[in-house]
Length: 360
View 1 (tube, rainbow, N blue to C red):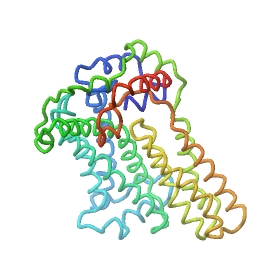
View 2 (cartoon, rainbow, N blue to C red; view 1 turned 90 degrees about the vertical axis):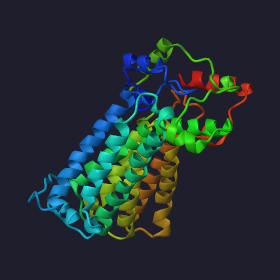
View 3 (cartoon, one colour; view 1 turned 60 degrees about the vertical axis):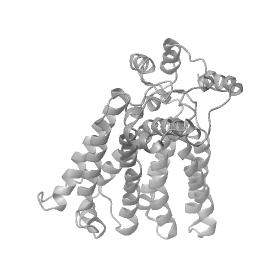
View 4 (cartoon, rainbow, N blue to C red; view 1 turned 180 degrees about the vertical axis):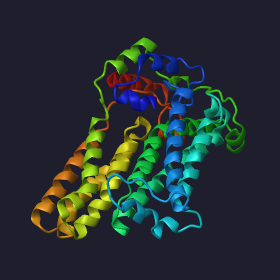
């Protein structure tokens, strides 16, 4: 969460100072993603998702006679009573409520050093928030494509699940790096995964560049422009929302309608996830989706012409906006590459120092 706020230029200096000074911060990291400041807001969001999904489940189970729908008329009833919502013995909203409860429980268990004392819990937290959260993307796509209807609270639930994914992955990354170091030191990864242990980074001190002081780091973050580093993803989200709404607003049919209803939710989802620094690479999915929107009018022969031109323009904008990564404001112990590569040599330290200075 802190990396997300900092990239948007809105993180308070006091909060950043307390986090950067944490004695439990992972090696090579400029903050500790296992602190309560990082996790409690995710737990709170999960509880909100539990309330929304629980309400929808009560309707599906017949406890509540009507479901609140401010935008799409009978759309919620169509979606919640569809075959898709009842593929399993338990209504899908009830499964969603269980998933949110799992997010909250796995997010709150453990102390501020759980990335190394309880790696199994952190990984379970990541599985609950990440892959299970992506299921909501399929459910959103299925609403207009398979059911020709929208459900407001279903969209809200999907948005909640997507918001949690990026900020939760930094803690998962710390635990995976921790397990990698256990492997490098010929320790049992299986034992470390379940029991955790303190692993000294012998011979890897060169990995940590000279870090700026707390005041310097706080000044760079608080003095940056609002939404700096994520403004492009916000624009991509807006374009994705328009793709979702355009078929109904403009009233066109054919393959272009299906493409927009599929690509729109995917674009929004990937842009939301990419707003967090540790998951910024997800933006490349939107680069591919933007390219597809540019090619689809020719490959699928969109008609009339202005629909194809609109798709190509939006696709080009999504592609260009998604290429821009944004500044790297935090040190993350080598990132995802550290999970499958050995530590950097001392000769690479200056390069990382320069990258850190440039990010500021």
